[in-house]
Length: 344
Image 1 (cartoon, rainbow, N blue to C red):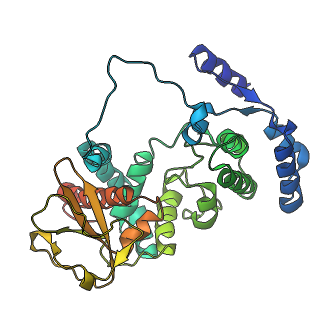
Image 2 (cartoon, rainbow, N blue to C red; image 1 turned 135 degrees about the horizontal axis):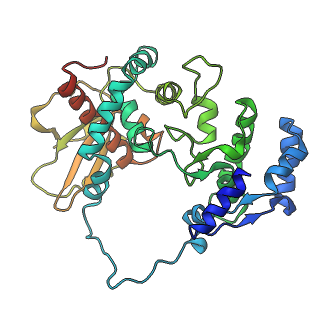
Image 3 (cartoon, rainbow, N blue to C red; image 1 turned 180 degrees about the vertical axis):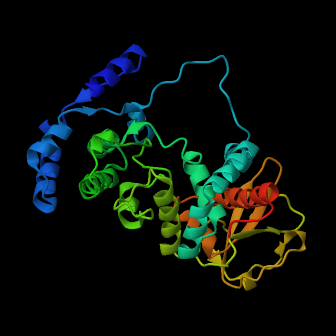
């Protein structure tokens, strides 16, 4: 009844809903048989799930251009200048409103953050920053039906269908071990779940039962905060080590001397002509990544330590990791400003 009401509501709102019976597809039959044989699912139960899937055209359009909705013609197409990608990127992720909201979130859950820091050694500001970027501190966890999204992306043609089939498998196994209805979970357009937006594969390996209720529930704050810290720790986070520091590279406005990005590192002895800005000290002696941030009139260049690379394991993007780093530093300063002391 609730599902019918939801469909009727979407129709009234003018949103197209298309139900599909995926059990008629050979690939889905094979998938179901595999889940029955390897993971001991009830075949009738799985047939029931796949017989009524809401086709997720919008999500599919992100991975297959054929399904993208055509934008209405406007008087003039909006264009962007050649440079300034970082300036545009940071505008939404590092706003004053997000910093204030994050500081309040840390204050509200300060006891959890302290306990998580003691166990995993990941500073509260970095865990909070990831939550801020991923779900705006739990406010926006996604409104896509995860089972329907993963089924659509697994069995409709797109560039990552194999990956999504693996995630669908893990999601179903997870629903069995954690005892939830796979049809009831909402998430992102790619099937990411919870406050920290874990994909099912990450949920399996990194989610923890921090509140001791017998379930790893990353929609709940204690488990979500601990799960993110556990993720970073297991990917190599080093306590007390820095994350990133800005450097200068001479009089030029653009940096081209060496290749940049999170997946390339250099011994610091090879980086001649680079100096820490503002006279800061840098005790980190290991190899560094060169991270270039493109602004309208110039490049910013940063050293990224090993902990910077660890953040990119959460999302494989230099800009993402830098946004997390800079938001974390802003959160730390704002928290101290508001409360006089810090969490650790």
